[in-house]
Length: 76
Image (cartoon, rainbow, N blue to C red; front, side, top):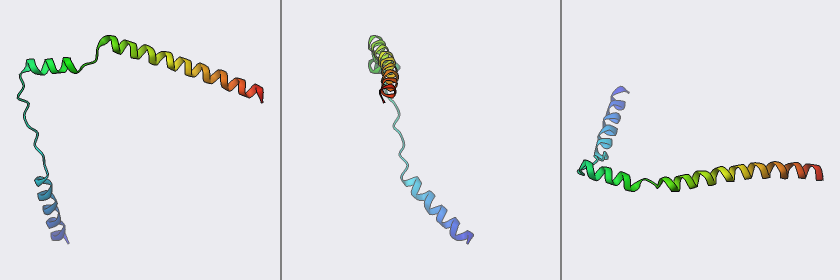
């Protein structure tokens, strides 16, 4: 029984080794990497707009849900 399991494990390890993908090294210079990072970051102004819009919509939703729920209960 142990021999069979050992053989199976050996086959599984061999198959796994065949499917391993090695990553290629990053050959960019540090300056290029920094420039790419800066280019992929969103603007500070757009982030401020998104945060203020999100905060306003959350407040409106919670306020509207409370008033609608109360009105529906009193109307029934």
